[in-house]
Amino acid sequence: MAAVGASLTFGAVKIPLHEVIDVIFGGNSSGPSAKIIELLRLPRTVEAIVVGAALGVAGALLQGSLGNPLASPDVIGVTSGAGFGAMLIILLYPDSIQLLAVSALFFGLLAAGLVFLVSFTGRTGGGISRVILAGIAIASLFSAATAAMMAAYPDRVPSGIFFLVGGLTSTGWNNLEQIWPYFAFGAVLTCFLIRPLDRLTLGDDVAASLGSRPRMIRLAAALAAAVLASAAAAIAGLLAFLGLVVPHVVRMIGGTNRHTFVIPVSALGGATLLVAADTLARTVRAPIEMPVGPFLVLLGVPLFLWLLRKAV
Amino acid sequence: MAAPLIEARGVEVTIGGAAILKGADLTLNAGELLAVVGPNGAGKSTFARAICGLRKRSAGTVSWSGRELSSLKGRDLARLRAFVPQRAEVPNGVSVHDAVSIGRSSHLKPFQSFSAEDRDVIAESLARARMTGFEDRQLNTLSGGEMQRVQIAIGLAQGAPVLIADEPTAQLDLGATAAVSKLLRDLVDDGLGVILIVHDLALAAAIADRVLVISDGRSTATGTPERVLTRETISKVWQVEAELIQHQGRSALHVEWLDRN
Image (cartoon, rainbow over all chains, first blue to last red; front, side, top):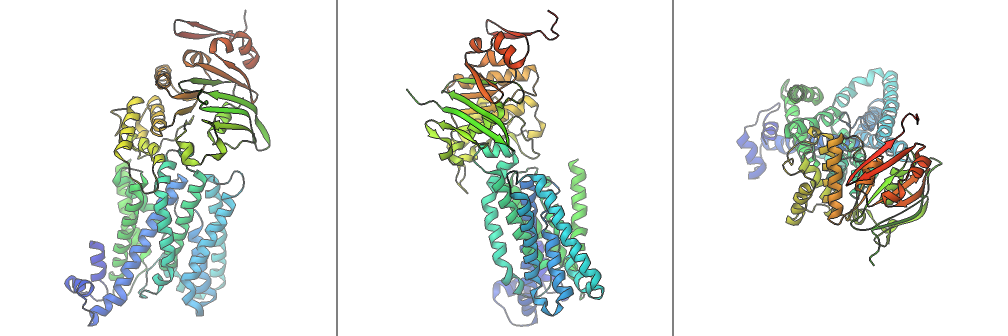
């Protein structure tokens, strides 16, 4: 709540908190402050909440389903795919910049789809190492293609930096209006996966003994994570760090690996961290807006390292 | 007469083109402990997995209380049998109570919470597995024997009439082996049907009602330990000269290790 309050209050123009409350709950929609809040800050804060929550959940889903603490949306190729999709528009079709979000979403999902095709098909499909190795290979493919495009159009690369390091923009509700069904799909699928993922924590054999299908759980969790992370990348660029770190922080603070705790709290933690980092990114050099990615790392890494040291 | 809890006939399993199980039979009744023994690679674990529905069969029939295995869906099957794996996962951040609660979750529909009855079953499962007092301990702080008892408690929380344990004593010391064995025997005496995959023939003879010998993918002998684990069978199946000695509830395998006689 504090992060949301700060996000709505601070920016190029500081608006007192009571005015913010008056605009949102009192229905005061006249005056420049109301316009700033309704058209710029509120959509951006909601975007930060949704994107942060989506990445936190995506990381928790992947770490839980793959049983690998290093798992994040990078592992299933989403980050590289979305990066390629965005840079394709920025570098090759800059006149169609309105397609950036859709292209990032499409290629993020395409990369994940290729990973699933390779890793989940066949008699021995669905093994953890096969998913991770396929993810690394497909991610390398898209990263190489992105690097090739950047080498071919070096003069246009600066336009893509904001996306590559991750950043939210004040474009109103447009992005969310386009992308929200993907967030909704990922969120609903996640709700059904919480209990099966707890069973998977005890190993594939126990999960199967309890009537679950480990391979299906893994595929569904990876699908939900791919959709959430692709949708997040479409709006805020590449912020995979958040998906890696937040579930770890949540587990360390909560002292439990139960997904009934880790998934909802990762959503909350991811949202809080991104809202706070975005507020910093908008205010540190106001009125110039910085990409949020480095600020996310600035806030997240010390906390993560402190907890890591405490845990060991 | 009630149908057997499990009846498996002519079960075959092929993995990667190799025939691992070539025709194995098994019958288990309520209140019976069946020890499945055999040399390494004979197909014991594969057979256990096949009758549990964890491994696809290429031939044969398996019925659970008269119902064909292939007609049973995940949750129905989870209420008929619990499988205790050979090597249990020991995740961080999961307490003993959490783990046993997860075992009970097979009785819940999506988003359904535990009822008072479910909570009672969880507490009772912990008590039967002699893990009361360990509820808040993290799994990664338990000894091998304690971990196996948790695995059994998870299986008990499923509320299934059959427990299938795949070499639960393989990595345990003598004391922990005795504790887990006594626990399994007590559960059987309370009416549970147990299939125990085991290498230790002396242990099998001590606690099993019947023994099933699997050799080269086939069930080759079944019956009481005294009838099946004879010098001739041991010599034929394990290629070792050995004799099982049983006396007043104690059992020992006398082995001619170095063939000096």
